[in-house]
Image (tube, rainbow, N blue to C red; front, side, top):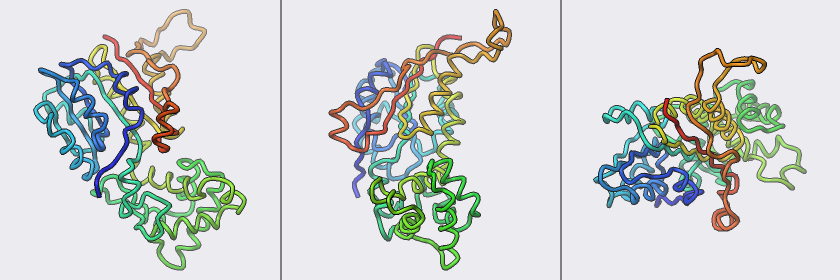
Length: 314
């Protein structure tokens, strides 16, 4: 299957990075290289692009997409949590821009064997973004205890029926291992009052999101990565992050605010005594969202939000 993915907020993201022709830029979620292609074609001379992705299919697709710019690009297969370490290994101390697009690609959703979609009936319960990851959604569903499953669906899926869904999952797995997306979607459907799955979105949507986040440790990776990436920016460098649900957006928003104003002194202190200095400023006081035209072209962009932070000299 061809790696197809429509890059969300493409023009807005490229514009927000203030790309310098001789700058160094890192795309930590390379995907099909839609964003990276636009960065690479704007580089000249000593300009350089490093693309990172943990998905083998993405790496293969991006390599082809960026072939005409291979003299100025480097592609690395890894999780973006290791971005700073891997780029420093190339002898680079600072970069001019970092991009993260924290979403599931259309390819991942539409490839049945990946097990991301609740629309498939007999796909394996996989949900890994990296096939080297030993943890799958099937393991979570069948081997985590009920309280763990409840917390995952409650916290990562923000589902008010999490307790009942977890109970139904445990009851069903006692009859036999749950192995397919269709089995799980049906279990969730029966755990939710009928009026909610008739009138609203697919009742399995939140559970599938929660399991995917747990399987790939998505929120943990994002939380642990932002500060280090900001430190890795050269003065005037920018980090642009696209998120697709409130949990991710909240992490980015709070991290950017903390780096803009890290002072921990009580508000009634006349002067700062903690010694913590601002690392830069938030460029986007409110997140940038897709235009009406983009929403019409790409329905999967509807929840996307772009936030940008700019580094200042210490």
